Length: 199
Image (cartoon, rainbow, N blue to C red; front, side, top):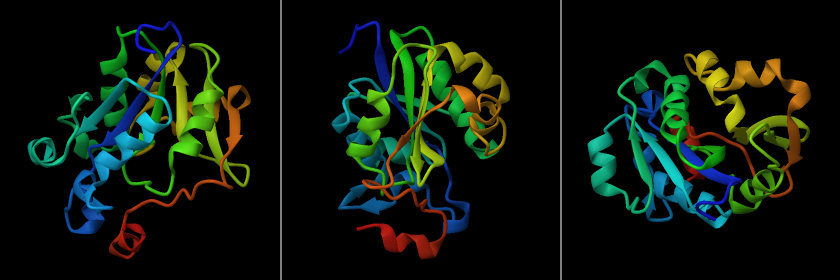
């Protein structure tokens, strides 16, 4: 698919420092015997994304050392502590100028969202004006697909931990919702109690 004008690139936001997990970077949490960031990349690839960019932040050098991320474009976000918004900006910036026409954004700490849900969202992509979001019981969640026509405006509004939330709220009527509640569970790994979700 590389070189195709309608390429959908995968974008993993994996920069978080795991503040509520005692400072353990989320990218390196173990899941099925490997770091969580590897799992997220595998999900995007299984869903059909050949180009995958991974935004790193907390303990980036250690993540590079421990995780098998061959074939991915690794993007370091020096401002990762400012929140998810800065990582989304870094990731979209890294895709600007490539042949990607949309970014399929996944969060590293949502291992309950697998290839089937991600592929459903990807399949709803039409062109660079597309805005697509997974929904769970009709409620918008992740992953989200952001057409390239929106990247500059999303980057301008992505602050703190809001990511694309403010932009998507302002463009609610343009979003295609894809129900995924039957095939995925959108929990986050945020607290020590959440670690029970990891295998």
